[in-house]
Amino acid sequence: MTRLLLLGGTAEARALADQLVAAGVDVTTSLAGRVADPRLPVGAVRIGGFGGIQGLRAALADYDAVVDATHPFATTMSANAAAACAAADRPLLRLERPGWVQRAGQAWHWADSHAHAGQLAARLGNRPVLTIGRQHLSSYLPALAGAAVVARVVAPPSIGLPPSWSVIRDRGPYALPGELALLRDHGADVIVTKDSGGEYTWPKMLAAEQLGLPVVVVRRPARPAGVPTVNDVERVVAWVLAGD
Ligand code: NAP
Image: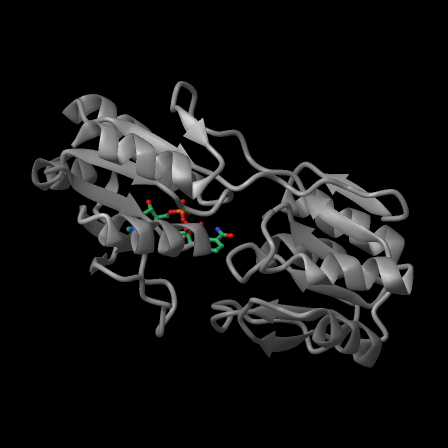
């Protein structure tokens, strides 16, 4: 039977683990260990980095195949998985949710980087809500140091933030009424988000649309070339079961 390593940390990875475990697959989900109380999938779980490409390559001795279901912005892990699987001759499949599609009436401004997103947000408003996580907050300091920023994060930021900034700790999935309240309570005039895709964080885009607020959307980074990629859990299950 295939021993599958599932690189996770996403809702899709948990949904995939559900289905694979139900199908009797020997699946181990790997989490980075960034948050203190992660949502745990069913099945076996390992937590913490592998130690770069070489560490992952060594770990692959215990697995027959790998599914990379990490977040669209977790580019280091995906690149390491591509390199380690090529070196260890293990099949690799990428599960990636589609990016969001802008609808008529939504005022989106695409940014090529977090620094660019900060500049766009500064041009569009002075009371931004940042929903880009905590890892890249420093990229926003040059443009937004004096702005009344609310940064919504899962885990506390590791850098000092200006006095005009406040932090809200929360974790999705989010619902439209709460997103409307957040934006209204802060008097937000612009939102910044990554193009995460999926349903969990989409309500903020609807809330911005309802309130007529612009949204700065950070484009997805480039993916490693040559890794077969699918968008839905069922196709991954079929791929895994075909290898059994
Ligand atoms: P990243 O920048 O691509 O990875 C940095 C390092 O963290 C990797 O080199 C690896 O360390 C370790 N790592 C990342 N994902 C791992 C996993 N699933 N299992 C074991 N080690 C992992 O990753 P990130 O953007 O910080 O994301 C970390 C985790 O959070 C991922 O599981 C991702 O799916 C989840 N997540 C990320 C975001 C986001 O916006 N980036 C949003 C929601 C969830 P070693 O080199 O030591 O192996």
